[in-house]
Image 1 (tube, rainbow, N blue to C red):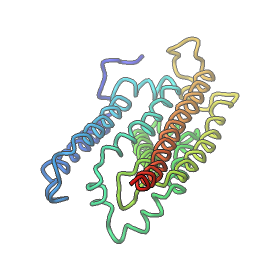
Image 2: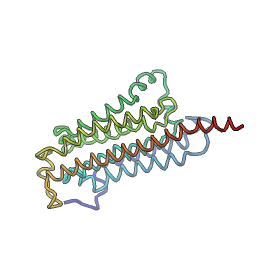
Image 3: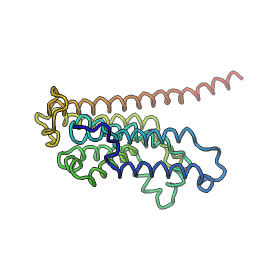
Image 4: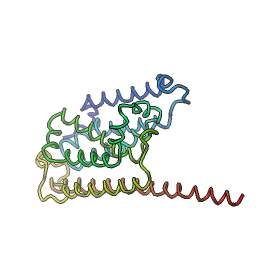
Length: 271
């Protein structure tokens, strides 16, 4: 059964999160003057977002919920993956100040490969491909049974989550977010591709993953197939709400942006 008092099941992941927080504190604090001389005060709002992302990642990966997601319920595992892909990745990216991102990425030898990698087409394609591959039976079971593969799965989920959000909320001035129209098309294409993955999980007539097929039933009414269908519903619902939310915010900002030139022209005419 689950040990609800065990909050340190994956020391490697916990140490990685602590290291990430410590390095962020150094580069945005004592090292800030060396990285970007003349900067204003400590980026408090960015730091709050970044550390909130780390805290949420710890809840997903270092709390007893991790045991629930790896041993007992596929639906819990799906919740963990969705947390890493959407809120954790978004908070980490929004927590990175522009001066720090551009100092790391604005290198002559990186400009061309990063321009290709961070384009909406590549970001969307890599995001869908990695998520789909990790939900195929063999890689998925490998991550459940082998800690190094599990660490690779977690790292790749966070990285492709960052790629997914980059065309939408990029903090970089060198590799900025896509235009409003491109963002809308990007989100629509990702939604279509995720629908195929949702259908694969939800519409299967048998339990796909042996670990969860033979796992002890924490909820008697939730058999392996129903658990799998619940995971499919969560994938489709949470992804759709996230994408629609991002699309709605994008349209709102697009409308505000398009109104400003008109308001400026009207103001100029009145003068």
